[in-house]
Amino acid sequence: QVQLVESGGGLVQAGGSLGLSCAASGSVISTNTMGWYRQAPGNQREFVATITRSGVITYADSVKGRFTISRDNVKNTVYLQMDSLKLEDTAVYYCGAGWSRIAYWGQGTQVTVSS
Image 1 (spheres, rainbow, N blue to C red):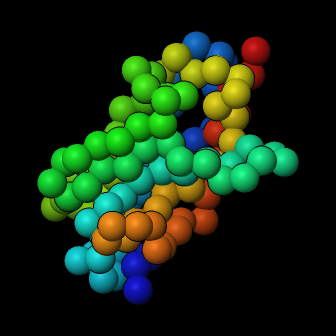
Image 2: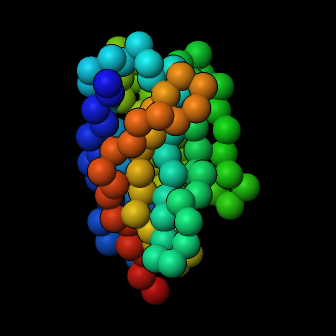
């Protein structure tokens, strides 16, 4: 089992920046892939970005050039730096981890972008 604890999030104005972090504990050997997904009200959970232990990164087209994912393998922590935030980035952001697919989820953290 893997436990994921997210921190960060909050309220920010459009165009601003916010950072999220997610620390993994437990069977961290299973956390080859870590990443972020988000779910806006009325929408399904959608992919944001993932990063493997070796540093292979994938972004959703909607966040490319604005969001940066990184990880610290020693601390078993993944980060998401969000810049140039837009109203449509408002959502609950979930940290996920797994070997090749996401098998574990954090509790989610709210990100609200205001005009």
